[in-house]
Image (cartoon, rainbow, N blue to C red):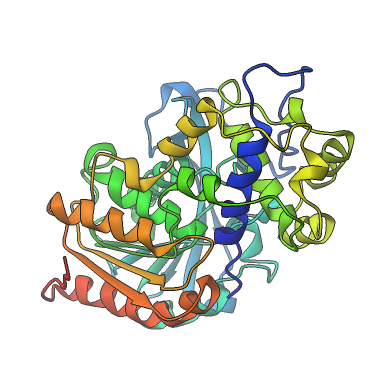
Length: 395
C-alpha cells in the first residue's frame, strides 16, 4: 500500500504557510474539478430540503472481482465545512447471505484533485491502493463501505469534511433495506489521509451522528496537528511536491473566501495548478516531481498567516474539544518525520482524559512501513469490537 497522503499533507501545509497573506496582489479564484459526466453524481434540485444522510440516488454495481458480494453505489446528502449541503457518494459491498453483518467504513487514501479518482471509480479501474484488503474483509463476513470522503469538489487535504461525509454515508446505507445493514454494528478504519477522515468521523459522531451504532475506530498515521507540521517544514524541491501542491489547492477549494492560494502563485505555479486541477495521483506526482515552493509562490519567505492557522486548527484532531464515545485503536510509526507521533500521542491523551478507551501502538519505522505493520492489529481490534470482547486500553 502506497501511503502518500501523510507526506503530501505535510508538505502542503508548509507550502500553504508560504502562500497565504492578508492582501492578495491580484484576483484569482480556486479551480474546481470538472463535473463528472455520469449523471448519477449530480445533486438533485431539492438537495437543500433534504437531511444529512438522506438517500438521493442508488444503483447496483458489480463487485464480483472482490468476492461473493452484492454491490451498490449510493448518492446521499451531506454538508461541507461552511454548512452548505452537498451530494456525496459511497460504494457498498455486502457478502451474499445473512442479514445485519458487521459494516466496516473503510476510508481509502485519496491523493487527487479529480472526482474520477475517488473509490467509486477506482474500485473498478484497478487504481485503488487498498484493494488487496477488501476480499479478506468480505471473507470475514463483513460488509464494506468506501466513501468518496473528499466530497464533490475533491477537496484533497480537508479532514473535518471527510469525517462528516463518512458519517452521512453510513447513515445512508443503513436506511436502504435491500443492503441488509439496518441493524449492523459499524467499525471505522483508515490510514494517513484515510485515517484523518476516520479519526474525525469517530470524534464528530457523538454530536453529529449519535444514533449510529459505531463500536470502534481504527486509525493510523494521522497528522493530528496541522499547524505544527506547517511550522516545522521547509519548501525545498521534493519528489512528492505535486501531491503537496494538490493538497494546497484542495484546501483552497473547501475554504474559498477564507483562505487564498491562487492569487499568490507565480506563472509557473499557475501553470502547474492548471495541469493538475483534474488529475489523479500518478499525474500529480509526475508533473510536480522536483519542484518547490520557491517556484510556485510569489512570496516564499512569508510566515504562517492567521487565516491559514485557523483553517489548520479547525482540521486538527489535537485541537478538537470533543472525543469519540467508542474505543479507539491508533497506530503510528515511531520515526514518522512527516506526521510526528507526538501530536497523535497528545491527541490520544486528550481523548483518554475525556473518557475514551484508547489503545495506541507505536511501531518501529517511518510513515510507509507503519501502514502495513499496523493493519493486522487494526482488523483484529475491529473483530474484537464486533464480537463484544473486552476493550483494550493503554491510557
